[in-house]
Image 1 (tube, rainbow over the protein chains, first blue to last red):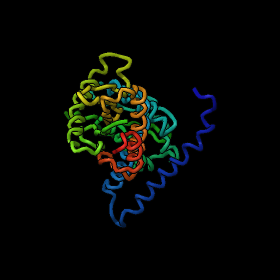
Image 2: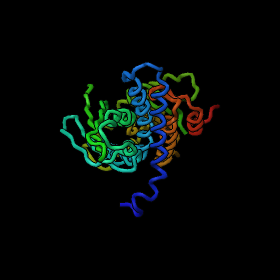
Image 3: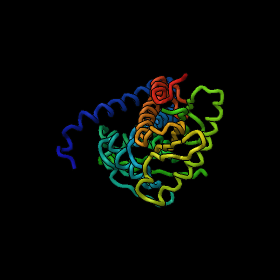
Image 4: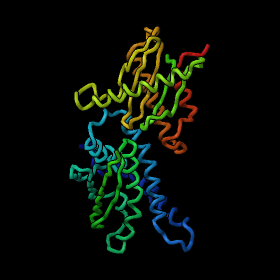
Length: 171
Length: 139
């Protein structure tokens, strides 16, 4: 555990990333042409952005770690070190069917913590998850793991976010 | 001091090769290429034994008549290969290790450069500088 309370020292670290993320979101949606419906293109832009960041970040984070034993080892790294680096906390729950599907659960997803509770905002949630999905996909891709990353939000007030990961094996 | 330094992508194509400007540069490319098999062998041995096998540094891959070839694989499956002259007996293991560390650090910086596309060849002047510092001086 840490010596100082969770609040201390974390505000300065997390806030800039959250603000930047929200600004990126606003920018992408504003710069879409007027009248053009969001047919997933903006989500894709965010996802791709996250992908590139994930690649670089994973390169840096694994620079000094030992070689990974297997896929589960990699997933645990994503849940602990990687998630902590980006969101200053670990994934709360990791489940797998040992056949290539992993579910990562974050009960207090930082990027959603600023959104109010309430059903009307639930449908906006995917926008806030796209970058992070890309982040994970990029991180895994850098380690040689091809994946599809999807996310869902079930309950806003508790900011529960389920990340389902489906890995297709390309041999 | 190396005579040839190469960075190979996880898909086994070269991202960067620098060798001494001799007439027979192709020979170095060939040496690096054959060393990839040895690298594969060494990596697949991981998991079967514990301890040192989890290191990124692979050590001496194989010696030829004139050269010694060393290898290193990152967690992102990128391989670094350093070829040194066999006659260079003064080069110690930890010197080679630190050369690989420098390469790895510089490579990480390249990866984090937003203008670099992962999978493209390495075009960084900084990286060039690091490599130059490790190569046998020309002439």
